[in-house]
Image (tube, rainbow, N blue to C red; front, side):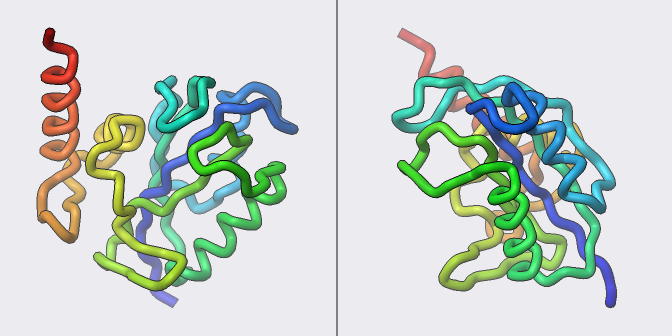
Length: 161
């Protein structure tokens, strides 16, 4: 079966079996397998009601799995790490999201690629920029470099008095 590439965002803001969120993200990178590139782990502010900062990274993975098969495997990894469904955007031991797929788009009830919110999330774009700056969003056709620049500009405008 031919291999395709995926960009997977990884985040944690709660201690788990592997220790602090940074250690949990590092363990998740190892658990995903097929990793051809990994960003460094960064700290970021939470989205939504959580008050705990996140540890985030992005990996590029090569696999012969279809998007639904990969999603199923990522959900099993989350479960093995102790993730339980709870409050949306709440604290979590681990979060594994498929952000991009080298074959373009995918849409089913429980999976949309590209990830609908990735274009505005610096905690995804900044790490992704370091490992795949020229990857193009299949919907906007903009590169990760361009999307990251836009998100940084929005943040700078928000900080102005």
